[in-house]
Image 1 (cartoon, rainbow, N blue to C red):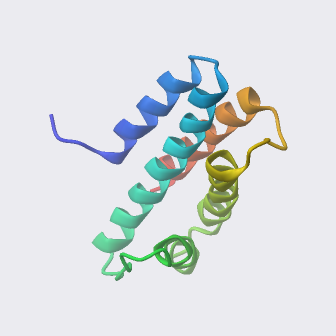
Image 2: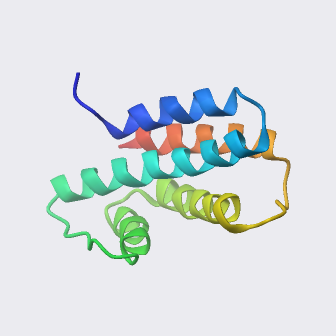
Length: 114
């Protein structure tokens, strides 16, 4: 079976089910990366060059919007903020259980739109 980025979303779902904060933070991060990389691949298939630097995140969501996918782009930007907080903040400004579930739902929405 070939690897796809939605496979990473299934991993996020499993992590969220563990319930401990480390797993929930990882679920948020994996949810973001599943959606981001799925969108990146979709754009590449449309002929868009996506850089391999940290700028890629901004480019993906901007280009997705430019290609008529404003709602998934907006969700992607929000999901990126969640991922950054989950990866870097010592204390989360939100409930990690609810936020992990929301991040997974948001990633599903982005993937479904593309």
